[in-house]
Structures are given as structure tokens and as C-alpha cells.
Amino acid sequence: MNKQETQVISVANLKGGVGKTTTAVSISAGLAMQGFRTVLVDLDSHLSASLNFLTPEEISKYPSLIDVLDRKVDFLNAAIPTHIRGLSVVLPGETQQRLERERENSRWEGKWDGKILFDVVEKTKSQGIDYMVIDTPPSVDSLTIGAISASQWILVPVTCEYLPLLGLKRFSQVLVHIRETTGRCPKILGYLMTMVDRRERITWEVENILLKTFGNQVFSTQIRVDTKVKVCPSHRKTIFEFEGEYGRASSDYLNLVKEIIERTGILV
Image (cartoon, rainbow, N blue to C red; front, top):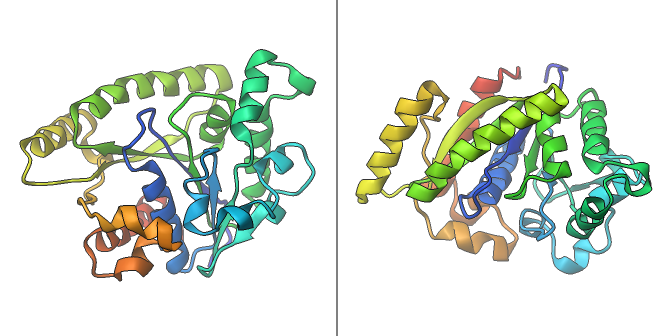
């Protein structure tokens, strides 16, 4: 693997239920399976990404992102190896409670967690990780802003529905705000159509709108509806392990990983 700066990808959308966590977990596992050293950062206090690899009991034993923000542990020491070779996960900890306190007092303990996270990610870019994938919550808080600001890329999952499509306009406004307030804003890696069902007319309508609006920023790969996606986390397995590489969603996500590697230009 050629030594180069870590490619940081934030998987983000202000609308919940669009497949953010599934996508973050799947592309992280897929990149690791392709031989890239990958770290998945779980920013959601619901632990949705983390629970794909660890039980609640196991999670309680490890350091979390909160410990990193408090500088109690180095970022890479908080990256817990998973059963997939080359893939580690950083647990969120009690981020929700932390953010509530931050909102009550923006200068709580003289810190702004988003800025600390930004600095941590920037420092980590030169430490031998190929990809960092950040699973962001469907909200705009300091950690989300810090994560997006430190990323080179944003991957935006979109379901084939009307409301998530409307939410993209607000998300674009958030990106403009981040650019204006931090001076940093990543490129759009791609808009990803998820839960695709070609039998539904709305699928074709959403696809046409996305292509007309965003052109080649829309991934050619689409993630088809697959009920196994909902089941595999309870088995602590990725979609690739649960249904094999020739399954519907697993083959789609493998194709997406290939597109990501091509678009980010990382060298093997």
C-alpha cells in the first residue's frame, strides 16, 4: 500500500432512516476486505454502527470517543479491532449527554468538542490509516460539524422517497454554513440511492431528479432492497458475511466500494 494521507469520508444526511449506518458499516468492511486499513468512527450515541461488531457488554469495557475528546486516550488506541482484518471501530460513548451540556454552555470547560474532533482527525491523517469512515447522526451538532469539516469527502445516502429528497436542500444549506464558519468543506463523494425497488414508480422519479440535479455525483451503483440488511447486525455480522458476496445487498455494496476507491483515487 502506498503511504498517503488518510481519506476521510463522512456518511451524512439530516434525514434518518436512509441507510447511513448500514452504508457506513458496509463500506468500512468492504474497504478492509480490499486490503485497506480502515477505521469506522461511530458518532451516534445509539451505537448502531458499533453494535454490528460488539455486544453492549463488550462496548462498556472499551475507551470511547469521549475519552479521546478528553485526551485520556490517543485516537488510535481507542480504535477497537473488529473480527474483520484491517477494520477497527471507534465507539461514541455518551456523546448525546455531552452535547446537551455543550448546548447549555458553549464554553463548557473551555472546550468545543467539534474543534477537538477536527484536530484529532487532522492529526490522524498521517498515521498510516487508508480510510476513515464516519457514521454521523441525523442532526447538526458540534461533533457532526467537526467531522464534516475534517473530511475530504461526503457520501450522502438517499432513499427513493419524496421527503428525503426535500431534505437534500437543507443539507446543502448546512454545508454552505460549515464552509462559511470553518473555512473547510469536503467534496461530495456521491449521492447513493438506497432501498431501491424498481417496481415502484417513485424510484424512477427520484433517480431522474437526482441525475438531473447532481449529474455524475450520483453513484452508478444503487443499493437494492434486501431484508437481510436488517437482520445481520443482530448476528454481529456484516452483510458480506451474512449473505455472501453474491447476495443482493452484498454485491451492491462491493460495487460501491470499487466506485469509492476509484473516486478517492487511493493507490494500492
